[in-house]
Image: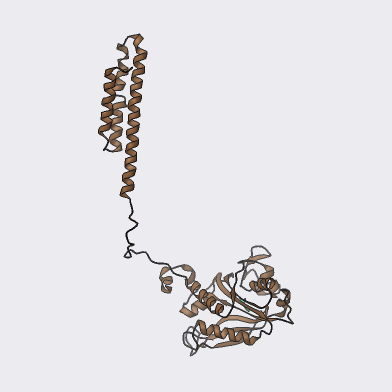
Length: 345
Ligand code: PHE
């Protein structure tokens, strides 16, 4: 049983706690030491023990303990309430009105596609319009797909460590997108009309070469496909990509996987063929390699070279973007300088 004095003390302590209801957490802690601390009245009661007859001491002690517990509980409640209130206030203060209209005056800029992606999309669109399907293949290739099946002999310079990034003797980063000719012919029966864009890797690094760049491969295999089909298709492509006045020039060349092979030049998009700095005065710019699929490659892929023929071409996207936009250095594509990239918005 609590005596009146102690009951009064409890009430007094509670009132004190109540008095800081609207105060800060600090105020509350101050009150705590006042009502429950070393110099508090409750603590003082314990010191009075001496004056109490021995037989009443246990009961008195219990009473004081109960009083302390009551005040402690009351304090804990007040503390919890204060914490809740602080949280509510914080939420209220940080409330965002999501119904307010977006402020367009702020400096956020919208992103846009990279120039290489723009050119890639444009080229894909043109060939899709000519009935090509778009496929993808792995960037990490085997020697077989990258070289062997493409009739590239063991002593060919492309196989040199100096030109190719090898992972093991047999596994490498593809140096061109041509392995996808093989992968496609292994899987599909003619007629085939495929386009394959992707990253390629070569151990090469200067103003017009980057160790990683992009190519697009094209392959058509069917009955009676001729060099004329290749020339007509590439001319239509060049005129769609630049303009109708663009002319094509086919020069004999050599690739182990095409026979005959050609290198394709376009009239310079900068000077229209008159000769300028971009085309080094020649009026022509070399843009891609192509040719009739070597019958050896057809046979390696299980296609009857007596029945079917095909053509293939491969072009570098950075090179085309450099010509199209007049970009002097391939490094600009990969430095991600926003002043450069912004121009392609
Ligand atoms: N793969 C060749 C290169 O990277 C280009 C090419 C593709 C040539 C298809 C002929 C046919 O240089």
